[in-house]
Image 1 (cartoon, rainbow, N blue to C red):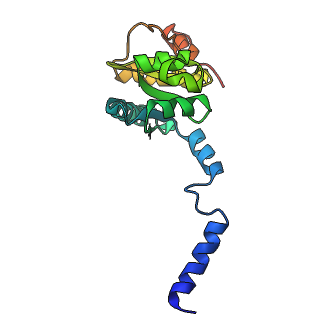
Image 2: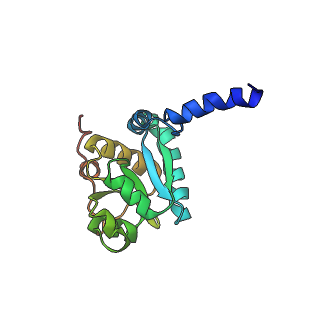
Image 3: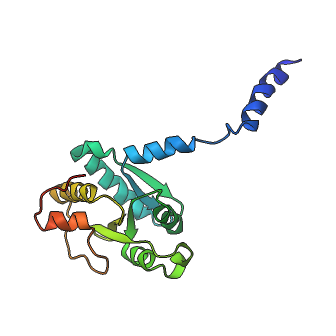
Length: 175
């Protein structure tokens, strides 16, 4: 047996046992639960820049959020992630957010995705799936409103219930 064979055998065994996966699924679930992932996508580079800015603000002023940016190749991929409980928060254009919410146009294959507004940004919106916990939305809204100009009326997408609680001056929800 030569040196090349010695190296090949463990590699072949690893691939045959399914070790080729980038990360075990269970660990990805844990990672998502421990970090606030803010979705963006490459087709609209401004979403990435905005998500990075928001993640930095949250990391500094709300460190327990462990904010990180997740970048998908397209808005359609973000729709898939939001609709399948793999992502809760994303920066989107207003048009994309409204189309995702209604399940129209290029987002029709993903069905309606119940999105709620966390913040109006300059050219984009920060949205969350309606399942995003009220307490988390309240904390994100409070933190962002103290440090970033995110004001404005909700427009076509309603405020997340947690954000609405914050805007109405209600105390931080429990749970």
